Image 1: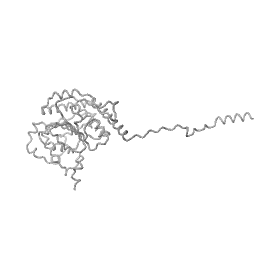
Image 2 (image 1 turned 120 degrees about the vertical axis):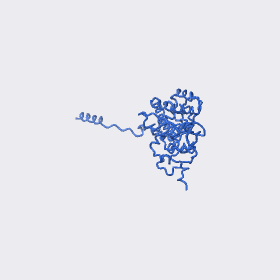
Image 3 (image 1 turned 90 degrees about the vertical axis):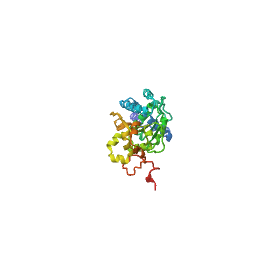
Image 4 (image 1 turned 90 degrees about the horizontal axis):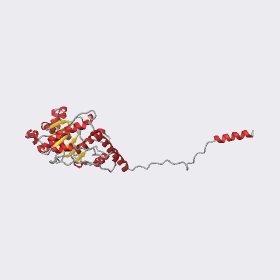
Length: 325
């Protein structure tokens, strides 16, 4: 009987629950130190740069890029001839494009500045970009920015000679653009920028019609327009979509210049259909401009759009007449 009792006791002791480890001895879970706003901002900047780099790789090897490049080449060759600049330099440049205008994926860092290959040329173009959109979050805007960066390198335009503006840019996007080396404008010009005699490419994809009208008004002379190239919404498309009376009333400078320009449409491919649709390269042959009547050039009234519905541009608040008494 005693032996049976001892056996049962040993069995009960073996089945007894183990003592729980005290809280003092329990290993504590290591908590991550909170990230500073600056560190988080720099991390986001690196992510955006990497996405731009990846988009550039895809665009560079696409059929669309080679076809679009041919279209731009045809236009700029004529434009350079008009400016009496050696055309050979353009062809040489177009054969020396390197895919290193953005950092390698492994080299993307918040404080890094992408390398840029510049080819010395005789035609010194400048570039202005309006309305590219929120490229940090929108893939369409990101591809448009990527195209711009490749175009700058193709045309031997230093990034510091490219001015960029969109009233919707976030602080993160401004920081990324500064890292890329382009010049971010601080003021909404509403497209009213004079080229001041300097040959300039305006890159304005899917912008409001008023922006193009303002740009033409700011350069309303044979000399200025003959030095400009506009990559943006098809002017022919605007003429087809808008009633003649609406075009002449609200956008008179576009209406008047239709007979004084040449337009080459961008190629359309399924991969980039939604990104570069309705896009053309426009330039203004001196011969066509000089054939326009003198009355056209005498009209130089600044556009105000007071009776225009669906303006499609963000006005400069400091100059908006509706904000004044």
